[in-house]
Image 1 (cartoon, helix red, strand yellow):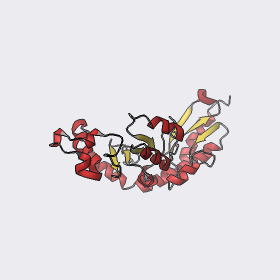
Image 2 (cartoon, rainbow, N blue to C red):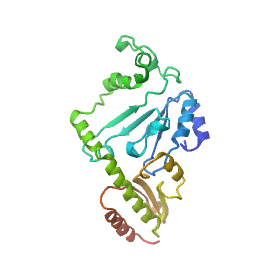
Image 3 (cartoon, rainbow, N blue to C red):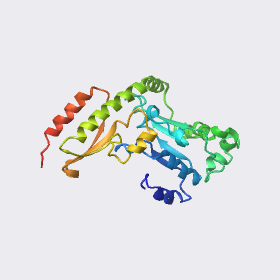
Image 4 (cartoon, rainbow, N blue to C red):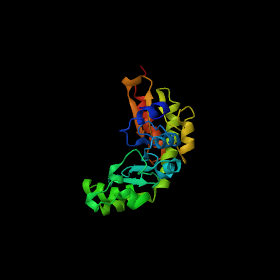
Length: 252
């Protein structure tokens, strides 16, 4: 399903077995940007929540809840921690979706015999889903972050705005360098005005357009589509490495 095609989304979520509408705010690996307000409208019209993976954008660049997302998820292992020393994930529930009037969520709307017959959505209201995540999902799956890894993650979060600013500044310089290189066919980065996602990025992102994107070489698929994850080292060093690699390519 094309997450940017409104008609195809409507058709897909019209299936009563569909429980959520899921998308990335800033997609990995191409750096495509989702129309969050449109997705929210379609999801809510269908009686299902909008779940957004905001890992690539992070809260420093995008706040999906402001545009109607009901649940936001993160792989904290990436930008949030920023050091690669701790694996983890996070779920943020905005507490706005009415599970009792939604398409049908028995885990939240029917009595749970493991907890004396309480109904999570009724008992905990706006906190029904996130309480269920704690009380049942963590109990059954065991996906509990250790205290030490939580400490490492929180330590990384303290520098998130600074790091994301540098990631984005570097990505801009690298993308512009590649966009002008005679061996590069296309750069998929929303910061370029030629990108079909540029207007969406200006609407939903702040402080930059993301630092993970792809570019395509002029000799096509056989030459390889390259995914870049731009770091916070000096942009000149990154560009020098890319220039050296591109110089080695056969012009044919």
